[in-house]
Image (cartoon, rainbow, N blue to C red; front, side, top):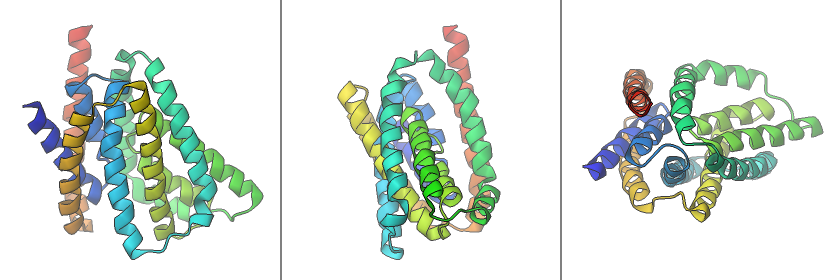
Length: 253
């Protein structure tokens, strides 16, 4: 039964993530229920995150050139921040991650629902590649990477926004670099959690398989109309999963 739950939730997350983003809002709560909240769920979720981000990066790379020089300092910050976040996460008692899910996931969901407005504002206020901007780019990458390594949901969108805010990039340039940054962040965190013994390969690969198939199909049907339909579905699924976490807190408390 657990295998079907992981496969189906991965498939649904992949479809939604490829159209509107926010797949991690589904995969992490499901893994928290299937395994346990905290480092075990987050570490295993990095298998899903790495595979999804890498495939998305390769798809975008076929369509757009990669300007690595413009975002190299950001990628360094992302890698360092993700490593630190993944080292800090196991130190937090697992019960607190249920509260984090219930508190942070609705905020990330609200952000994703309004991300177009944030992205437009970020493009309008992008800064030039001055020395000050490079420092901002490094710092932004570090803090976003630390969040992604420590917890994760919405990290890819925050990376895209960070690139648009801290560097004057075209949308597709920033989008491609954000996919690479997401791959690096998830990969670094996966290695770190794996060394610490917090990764469950079987569960992670089952969910990743479902997400890859869902992402492929979702990408084929992606459109503005599809995004309008998918967003309420994402909200409903996330609310349902968070209610399950709330129930667990009440039962265990």
